[in-house]
Amino acid sequence: MTNSAEELEGAATILVIGSNTSATHPLIAWRIFTAKEKGAKLIVVDPRKTHIARFADLYLAERPGTDVAVINGLINVIVREGWYDEEFVRSRTEGFEALKELIAEYTPERVEEISGVPAEQLRQAAEMYAKRSPSSIVYCMGITQHTVGVDNVLALADLAMVTGQIGKPSSGVNPLRGQNNVQGSTDMGAIPASLPGYQSLADDAVVAKFEKAWGVTLSRKPGLTLMEMVDAAAHGTLKALYIMGENPLVSDPDVGHVKKALENLDLLVVQDIFPMETTALAHVVLPAVTFAEKDGTFVSTDRRIQRVRKAVEPLGDSRPDWRIICDLAKALGAAGFDYASPKEVFDEIASLVPLYAGVDYGRIRENGLQWPCRTKEDPGTAYLHKGGFTKGLGTLKPIAFKAPAELPDAEYPLYLMTGRDPFHYHTGTMTRRSKRLTDQLNSCYVQISPADARRLGVRSGDMTRIKSRRGAIEAEARVTKAVPEGSVFVPFHFAEAAANALTNPALDPVVKIPEYKVCAVRMEALRS
Image 1: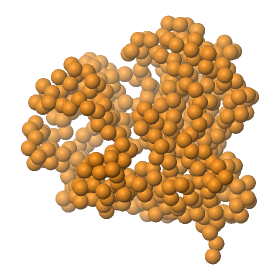
Image 2: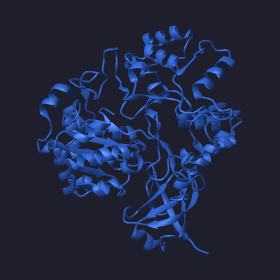
Image 3: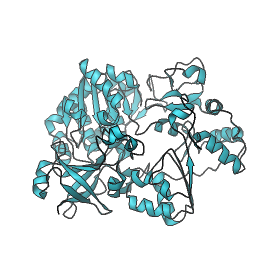
Image 4: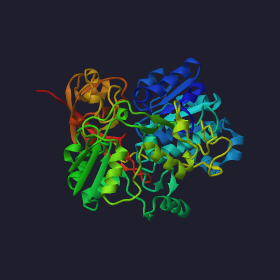
């Protein structure tokens, strides 16, 4: 996030796109609703009329996978009407003329043809976002989990820069992380071509610094992404996999393929807090502890480094992740893993990661610190890009619309959308152990529009079969106007009816994220 979560309360306009915020990030949604109470306008762009969309001043019901067209259409109107920030564009960006040339094609009328969003609604949204400042963009995996996920993010950056809605309070481009501490894990280098702190593996000086600190010679070859690992395991070129805090047999696309890949490994190690579908395939299970049984730090979605303090002693043979890793490393003959506490690990992080250099346990205390925090006197950074971008001028990238990898056809005539239900979290590993939550929901469902339900002879409460080119599941039908005609929605929490048995493993070519959010399915009622 370029800005802080609390800054949303000061926004005059909030554009939520690809985020079912009140179901998946309720504390962020609370800040959005607080802003609305203060007079802010809310624009929601989503194929499905989610809970937060019901409260929108403008709801743009786009077709699945048409985000780039909609965003380009907003920029088209803003530029044509002269609502863009000429001074910001001139002094802080490059590439405006090329962008202007491309977005000229995306008139509101053409965008309506592509996306289904009425031209007049698009014009209203453009005026609201551009003229009611400050404006914040909030997005989540409805933007990123596409074969054009990178394009979607770049288009949103274009929108923010063209209007000068970045580098100031209550503005910016603000992605919401999908799981707890995803931000912290990527900060620490859990991406293939980076060392901790987003320091490039291609930078000789960076690599030399880490090699000196760790007393090793580092490979300069970037690693594999998650889906590349799965494919490598399936082909036998990856022999061993060590999984921590992840349940790919429910969370990854085309789970039938994932299962075969994991079964093909010579060694599968799973480190987690509960037995689950993936541990059932493991050769070794390492019992980890919950957040309440360990000390350390988490980093929240808005770059805030926070302390976690142990409340209870670990149960049974379970151990903190950091201690398991250190003991395993020493058993394998590695030196340098003699840490006495998580504090010592964090001190090393601060010594090697400039973004964290000014942070220590004494400074974090109750409210944490937001990186970049480069010195002990630095109060941290509430919002990024004040006065300039790290790279110099911000690059405006012309992004053309590309259709999803798989579209409905005669055999599979419906779009499938996947996501979360308010009562469960991710693969249900934790929440489906809570009776209070399972009393509310403990089986899969499929949302379908009234028009499609009539056409297919489906009633609410009917068991149905949903089938794609990769697999099939059975789920109870819920007929609702929240889903547009031609689409169905399935939550992905339920291993026994895994939505990801259906989803398409096609990848974004840059970051290799799968297209979870759009694929083609067919549906039928099951009656005895």
